[in-house]
Length: 127
Image (tube, rainbow, N blue to C red; front, side):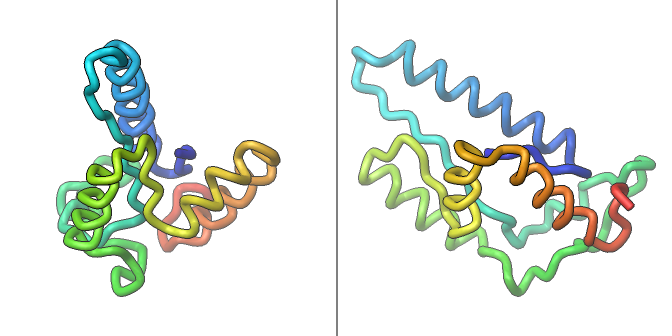
């Protein structure tokens, strides 16, 4: 999990969910409750029609190439497999796994890389 520049509200909600799920796991440690944190990458969906831009207008079109994104069905299959294998953390893409690894050893480098990638999106507020 790493914050996405230009997607502050989205990132905040994901950090909140992670904290909630980690706490739920710990509180139920002796009860056998399985809690998995699922981390899909960018996923092709219609959420962009509800997403708002920095000025509060509807985003409408995604600035990303959806043909390169996971589908909701792919995400669901991976989550189901993670539940079957009782994983604690389900990182679904190579980028997510690399981010998780690099963040431990070179967090400042990772910040710069995320900024660079997100600043290249059309209409990025980081330009």
